[in-house]
Image (tube, helix red, strand yellow):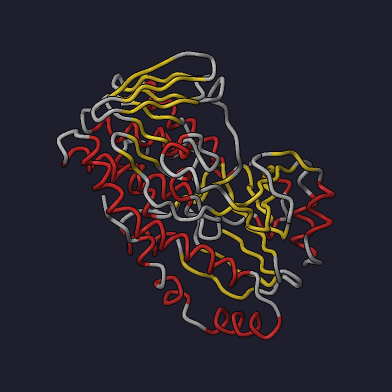
Length: 386
């Protein structure tokens, strides 16, 4: 079975299928597996899958387990809410909430795949052509190499080349925002922001998120701002001035944190219209290739992990028949993916409120029960649909 894309979703799918006794060949377009990105939050619905894939021990030295989500008013730093994570969410959902550097997570997935005899990894393989029959798929790369398999799983991201074979009319749409990301040494961060928490700072039309990664030695941060300039690059370098010019006037502590970062990478955010179908015969899509979402619930990578688990289970149920399994996989996953996409957009709108609506939001955060506020996300973190 062929998998186009060696990111989080593609590698997790290969590992999940290997545990079902199925062999895969992962075709990665990059010349080498390199550590890219900044931080990633993984709720219990994702950590549960990583644990089942046997990655807990490899990730343990690198992950953080935040105690709370601390929400602050961006302009003055006033604390609005302290929402429970840590032991509370682990006991409630049977799995922890992790924060980790994306590079550390990806490295653990790559190593696990290399150690698995049922998985073959090929780099420098950009799939550009697909020919499918009822029981076989052939793909060709831009270099002229070809591979064949019983099925093809397109896990090649938001700008998927394989999506054109299934839903050519669906292309990413600029979301009008960009995320600037950076990672700094924890020692370089203001002392008040070194706690094992996820910090969220709210502004009209912007927000900032930060949390410790790399075993508590570094702090990952992301600044979400309005930005009409689109683009396909998710890691384009921008100078610190780019961030400073777009972030609203903010509390001194946050300003000190943002200015402590000497380098930033810009990620132009996009949405993806719902595809009419994710699958066609022995070809299907997974992760951002099928249902890219904005990152305002920190669920993009986690949805890909969920996809991997459900797809592996569907192939087992279908006795390895790809077309039947892919129909089952899509039927189970589509409603969930659409719900998370809608909730992510809504969360972004709540974050970026202004005026009287922002004041009402802040009152709810200040005086609402933190546990009840977090319990509203039981449907998200409590997922066990594999």
